[in-house]
Image (cartoon, rainbow, N blue to C red):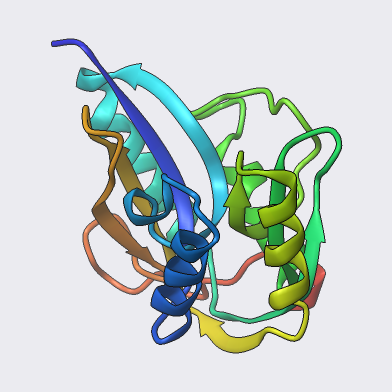
Length: 192
């Protein structure tokens, strides 16, 4: 059946998602229109396509244990010189994102993956472009701010054309059968 490349992320809602995507394109990032604006929970991960039902059940279980939490983006940061990335910072909700990404990659589940770098939730706004344009991205979005309530995450698949497409949403507190989970809450201290 072959392999597929999957990713799990929290979408940045409108109008912020489109705004940051357009800004990313404006900085000259050729991948901007193929990547929905997001906070990564699982970076691109190649799996056997026939594992998809098990992966979907695992993600439904992670989401069922979740509860909505506040997200706030504010200011910029960069991973340079280690990685050619400029990002908008997750100023609130980072701990919840870290908790979620650990559950998504849990060693008992189907999406076990070692990370190349320690997990740092962020929203990429420039990747692999000229240093000058990276500086422009960093400076021009320094005052950017956005807030919303994160109500879940989504599973994406990267197509042969390099474009990421959503396969399924996973709202928090909903069981695998679409039934609200009884007493659903994250065991992260800030969510009790």
